[in-house]
Structures are given as structure tokens and as C-alpha cells.
Length: 127
Image (cartoon, rainbow, N blue to C red; front, side, top):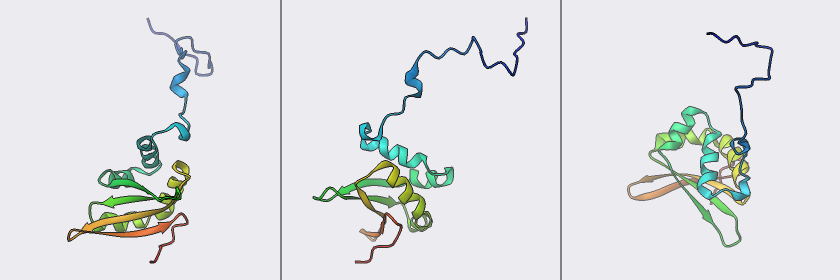
């Protein structure tokens, strides 16, 4: 027998969610660095997430507690594409880490690490 459903009736007896944990969002202060990194990646569109999938990440924290998120890109093409998204990167960093003040887009060439470092405003840091 077919059951008719009233599209205007939002009281559905078959939709029983007793487990409130399904909707509980973990506060950033309780997240591990790995969970924060996963959160950081989720804020990007699918094409950017695909590029980030091939990158390596590390947090470098100075003695004063401030730090840099280093993104090691697999090649120069990925680094150039991500550098065009620096505003999105800084916005996403701000939602995950309060102590990260810079981010670097790095690529390894001829056995050396070459990095471009940006402020939280997306400005290139010249040294």
C-alpha cells in the first residue's frame, strides 16, 4: 500500500532524531590541528580543494606564539593558481587559527624550498 505524504505537513512521525550529537559542532578551541586543517580546506570550492589535496601543510610557530601556515605546492603551476586565491586563503586562515599571521606558498625546485610569504591581508612580504 502506498503512503500519501502531505507536502505542507512538517510533522513527520517517521523522521525521528533523538541523537542531538549529529548537529553538534565542535568549537575551534577543542579541535586538533588536523581538524582545523580539514575545516580550512572545506571552505574552498571543489577545484581549489583538488589543488590543495596535492599540497603538504605545516604550521611554523615562533617563540612569541605567532605563526605561519606553510603550503608546499607540488609544482609552480599550483603555486601560481593558489596565489590568485590569497584573499580566500587568508579569510579561511582567520576562521581556523587566531595565532597564524602569515601564510607561505612554497615549491621545491632543484632541492631548495622557494616560498612566497603573505600577510593576513594578502600582501606579499618582502625580506
